[in-house]
Amino acid sequence: MDADLWLVVGLGNPGPSYAKNRHNAGFMVLDVLASRAGGRFKSHRARADVLEGRLAGARVVLAKPRSFMNESGGPVKGLRDFYKVPVERVVVVHDELDIPFGAVRLKQGGGDNGHNGLRSITKSLGAKEYPRVRFGVGRPPGRMDAAAFVLKDFSAAERKELDFGVDRAADAVEALLTDGLAAAQNAFHAG
Image (cartoon, rainbow, N blue to C red; front, side, top):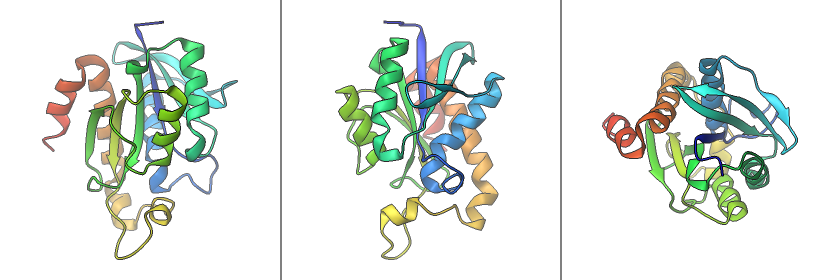
């Protein structure tokens, strides 16, 4: 195992029709991190786009699975096996319904809370103790189905704040890599 390397995975659905959906918040954060790392994503045989580099001084592989969200586990396991990264250094960045829009929360392990991407990753890795950086997308209005809500684009009002929130989530990933989970939680859970 490569104990110095981090695998940071952003979750989303491939293709332009999904690009601005709430469910693609993980991809949005990874795009910011790629820009900060000064690199570009390249196709990997594990059905993902990856960027190998340094982020906040840490060695990282940034990855966006090319599968649909509910099949994210295969590419994540393929990358984890290829790069020989311990599961506790596989960071998953994803959208979260139970957090207010734009809020960022970090946690280690836990259930999937109905998130099909997390369910697929947990099943494929055979473990749930990987760290997560959760980007709040809020709850659906009225009786709207949660699955329909996350596949809709952010609202006009949300889009005005989206870049700030995505930047903050990218900051949280960097804090996790450099300062550890507890320090990152202290810094980002207050706001």
